[in-house]
Length: 236
Image 1 (tube, one colour):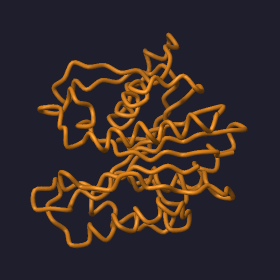
Image 2 (cartoon, rainbow, N blue to C red):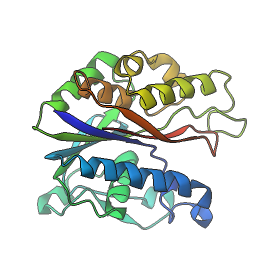
Image 3 (cartoon, rainbow, N blue to C red):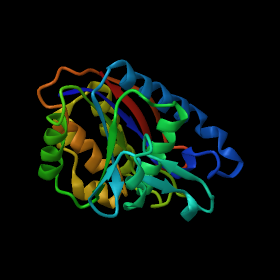
C-alpha cells in the first residue's frame, strides 16, 4: 500500500556540477526536494520505488548506476546501495540519475529501492495499472516521482512560448497540492506531449498507486526558472 509519495522535477541542472555556476536559482528547488524526501523517510516504508521519464520502459534494480557524462560532467551516481551485479545492467536514464543524486544527497538508507523508467507515449490506463501494481508490491510503499511540467512557459524555453503551458502547469500544481487522483488521471496525454511535459506519465502512475488511500498533498515548490515548469510536492 502506498503510504507516502514525493514529486520532484528532474532537470540535470539540479546537480550543481552539471549547472554552470551551480545555478543558485535552483537552490529553493533543491531544498524542497530534500524536504519531501524527509517526508518519505518519516513514513517508514518497506520499499521505495523511483519512477521517472525515459526513452523506453525499463526496470532498474537497487545498485544500478548512471552518470552525467552526457551533460559534459564526469560524475557517476548509484541508485541506493551497491548490489554488485546491478552495476552491469542498463544505465539509469537521466531522470533516475537525478533521483539517485537527490537520494545520495540526503543519505537515504531507510528502505530498499528500485527504479522504473517509463516512456512518454505510455497510455493513461497503463500508467494507472502500473501504479496499482507498485502500491501492492509491499505492505508500506513509498514513491518518488520524477518529472517536469511544460517546457513552453517563455520565449526562451526549450519548447518556445505556448499560451496553454501556464494553465496546464497550474492544473498539475493544484492536483498535486490537493492529492487529487482523478485530476491527475484526467491530464491530456496529447497536450502534455505538445507542451513537452515529461512528468505526465509518472504523475499518472502516482494516481494509480494512490487510489483508495487517504493521502494529503502539500505543494512545496512551483516555478519555471528556465521556462520549464518545476514542481515539488509531498503526499502523506
